[in-house]
Amino acid sequence: METKKKIMLTGDRPTGRLHIGHYVGSLRQRVEIQNSGEYDEIFVMLADAQALTDNFDDPEKVRESVMQCAIDYLSIGIDPEKTNIFIQSEVPQLHELTVYYMNLVTVARVQRNPTVKNEIKLRNFEANIPVGFFTYPISQASDITAFKATIVPVGEDQEPMLEQCREIVRKFNYTYGKDVLVEPEIYLPPNKACLRLPGTDGQAKMSKSLGNTIYLSDPEDVLKKKVMSMFTDPNHLRVEDPGSLEGNTVFTYLDAFCSDEDFDKYLPEYKNLDELKAHYQRGGLGDVKVKKFLFKVLNDFLAPIREKRAYYEAHPEEVIEAITKGTMAARAKAEETLRDVKEAMKIDYFEKWEKDYGVRYDK
Ligand code: ATP
Ligand code: MG
Image 1 (cartoon, rainbow, N blue to C red):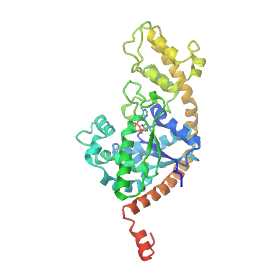
Image 2 (cartoon, rainbow, N blue to C red):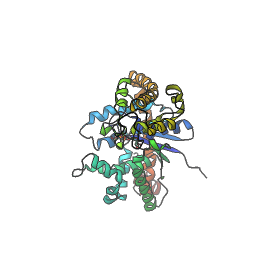
Image 3 (cartoon, rainbow, N blue to C red):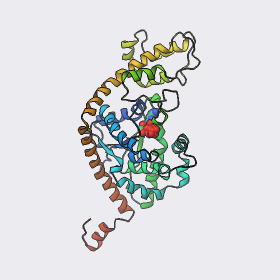
Image 4 (cartoon, rainbow, N blue to C red):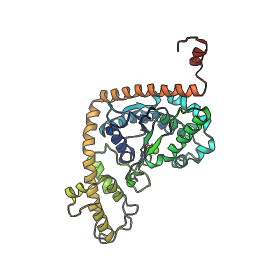
């Protein structure tokens, strides 16, 4: 029996540059998967069509962000020899699939999707939701299933999207009597702090739309300013006061980024993060000291990324070549799936007539 292929698909909305929330939530896992050598096919999508669903009046931002996100990918270790980076709108098969999947989902079901609910609130869309935005979970199911993805590395906010996608797969396969589509599995970050990295302002999620981000491309001085003004424990007024870790963003970021080696290097009076946390909770440890440490940890992480970014900014032709190659591969794969879908739905007219009547045709 043929063993099932291992295929990864994930992506980002090009609505700005990528930030450290994207990194811990999804980018880090993508690079691990890519470098594990265990996957047969790997796709990373620049979801420009999805970005336009709530940024339709700002196409310049989306276009510019496509390039910037691609540079971010290459700078953090996505290798175009192993990973197909592609542009969503350049793979029209995805939109065709969406039209067919729309029959399989009710309005009530999309309305119940907690991520959609939340994002509608966030964008003040309550009374005026664009239809395109409302249906984006269906289009996301097309993106995933077109590649027969078995794994989708994403942050926790995407869990309801994956559930909705799996429902569409089951409904499609049940209705059309074939195992055409593949149910994907979500791959969440293994570290709890990374499931949904909070913003520098302490809000529940770091997000481009909320302006509470640390970008992968932030220069050192910007990073320093952002870290030094980060949200901590609002009741920790004097150094000698006991501090709380609950909702304390500086410690959440340390959970996500620091290692014992960082303590050796920058804070040798502590063995590890547990010791630092204990001191903070006891009292006698000031926020400034912890923030300075976090700055060094993050700066060490970002320095090599900045260097690679400068290289790709000076070599846009390499970025364009990577996207072109990836987009061609994505089109071929999505076309294969679309053909299977149309056959199952009995709308493969010309192929069928050729089989039944021997009438050849030129597509
Ligand atoms: P937008 O505000 O435009 O929706 P965003 O910052 O939420 O932007 P997306 O492009 O929607 O970014 O998300 C891309 C990927 O990054 C998804 O897998 C998402 O789960 C993950 N992600 C985004 N923000 C975070 C975060 N703060 N923590 C962990 N993962 C995140
Ligand atoms: Mg988002």
